[in-house]
Length: 113
Length: 111
Image (spheres, rainbow over the protein chains, first blue to last red):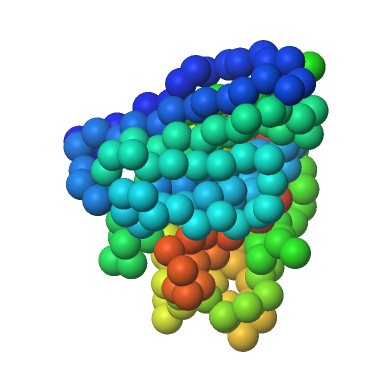
């Protein structure tokens, strides 16, 4: 069966510090991978998605970047965090067009102080 | 702007009652999905309804889709305290491999 991991679960970082959040998927090959951000009490905002290694599409201009160094690894990064980067970050995977549902990781709660 | 907008934003019912949540969207879709999110957790996929389907059932869940009105509803029958969560609709347009999520309905089921 497929599983998706995210870490860390919570993170408190000062403004201006770097960020690296990691997401890995097990039990599937060549998944589509997604990074979302959820502000408190709000819906999900798609940040990045990837359909293959090294292929990253950015949805919203921002202070963040994403990379996919391996088939089942997706990394969200920032060189210098802003207060507005605080939120709940969710990684998800899905398969192409035939299986449109997405499967989410447990999320990372990021607080930038 | 949000593709999906849920209504109501919050709903409080007693255990055993039915809960109905609505979702409206703006553009043509390939399918519409409903997800559930417990507080502080990731989302869990509940049900997917394709644009050529009008109704779908899964256990205590019933989803309807009206493409002429660009709307969908999620009915949870005989609700339980464990159904307390936020529920999101998401639309898949097929132009890219991505979903667009609404802002969610917070459901509170009390004993």
